[in-house]
Amino acid sequence: MNAQHPQIHYWTTRDVPERQQMDYYASVLSSAVDPMGITKRVVGSFEADIESTELGPISLIHGRGAAHDCIRDKGDIARSTGRNFHLIINTGSAWRVDHRERLPLRKGDGVLLDSRYGYRLDFLDPFENVHLKLPEEWLTRWIPDTDVVVGRPIAFDGAWGKALTAFVSQLTPDFVVAAPLPHSVIADHVGALFALYANEFSGIRSSTPAGRALRDRIEEVITQRCTEFSLCAQDVADALGISTRTLHRGLASCQQTFGASLMTARVELATRMLESPLFRRLTTGEIGRRAGFSDPSHFARVYRRLCGRTPVQARRPV
Image (cartoon, rainbow, N blue to C red; front, side):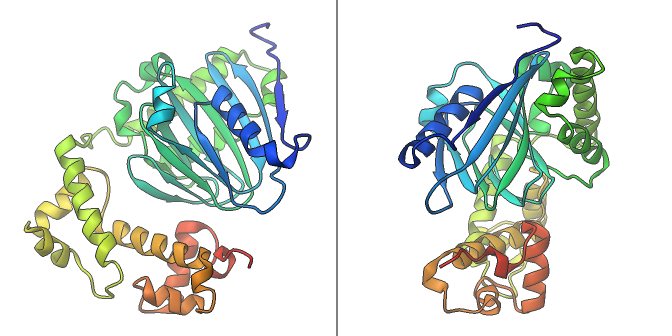
């Protein structure tokens, strides 16, 4: 394969028997990305197309298709060889990521995953994403402390996040093959934008194991009590026997806030009810109330902001 004119590899489930489609799709992703499991969110045939090529040291993967979930567990990690990072930007729909912390992401947002850890990616609607597989040696030349950015939401409308997601979203295998610039130049531009994005957090010290343990305890209480309309930081701190200052510092060490964590917990609870047939008879307003939102319009606004769609749109077909 010529380094300047790489091949484009194509895969599709369209020509695969329906009963074999998910296994085929999982095997393709496990080969091109990392070992993982797949569950679909559609009834009947699952359609997905993937194409990939090489951009110097970077693998570029472009995919589109039906809603599904990707799950990477301890067994998948054990079967992996080497360490890679994965920059994923979903331009097709809002999505969710669970990778060191839970993230509701908007259409166009990105995230950086570390193959040393498990993850769950929920593509709630038809997806289209750009995926860069980044070797550890290459990325750490640009970002020595990768923990600063792994698992953080890369906002499409943020400062340097906007520049990074906008540039990477334009990369397709067809563009790479016909690129007017050397691939090393394009790859270096990705690295430089990543370094500038990471520099935004240079003043924020990476969380420690103790800090993450405290964060997890705080989030556990928030999850358990998020249905309480008046839940505040003092309530959670009292339940844990810590001061509110310790609570806020514990969340801040993991680049989180109490308000954002509370809204995330309520939205995730509402989503589970919206997607469950057991709550089909309830109005979306009542589901919002049961999830801790005292006002239906506030629930709708928060849900749309975090999930990129309305509560009504989130309901699965009967």
